[in-house]
Image (cartoon, rainbow, N blue to C red; front, side, top):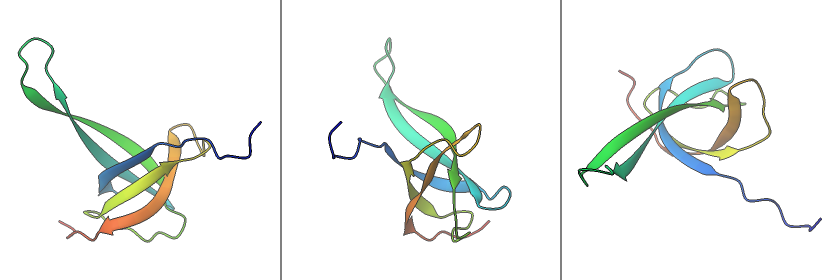
Length: 88
């Protein structure tokens, strides 16, 4: 095997839930073209992200990087906070 680190996915999203200790849920938005009507539509998906230091709050925009599975649904960890939001 080579010494290079394997490519890991990086996702950006908005924190929508601070569920439990060291876990947050982010909402990732992507834009795709509808196959029949050719209109650009939004698609959303939620990811569970590991936040070791409990640093983020609801409303923050964060960047998460793929890691080993930490639980059944948690395979991303916090990479950096892009912007601080206002909690609703």
